Length: 215
Image 1 (cartoon, rainbow, N blue to C red):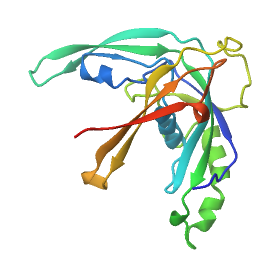
Image 2: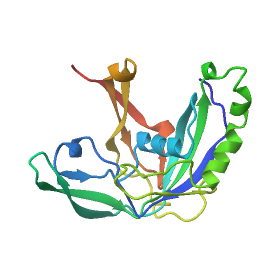
Image 3: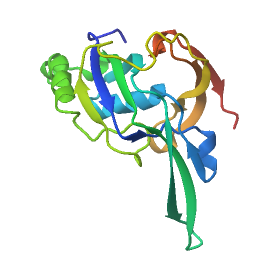
């Protein structure tokens, strides 16, 4: 698929965010990554605007606020008919600028719906101005709802401006599935070395490693 649009930019913020790590899902404590993962940003874009045949691609994310954590204790019922205590460490007051574009799969376009896809750019801009077509979350859905606003890329002051390159962190990237519908299973798991440079996460320059899942 070839690139089908110009860049779209928007600002997204929330009182707290949870970009959960795969290892923290196994116990009673969940800790957020210090920055959003690629798959979580794709989830935000799909919540703002989604259409069959339209595939979002994230170019970069700018971290605007300082990375700070806040912990919360939540009780959930278990099969033993008692409530266990879970400790969640959220990101506090996160704010990001997102730069993305989309690719269009031509097999979804036919004579009947061709006119609808021609207006995709205008519909996306309207969706960003109204705050998204659906409820947008920063990461996990048990966090708070996010506010989406249109903006210009690199506008405003960011906490990490002119602070150089951060240390790379090995972060989850995405799952690759094989099969269809109910017969889907994970074939590969993707991880990447993700870092910020002057507050900007450039996903086009990330170092990605794909590992096959042994079954």
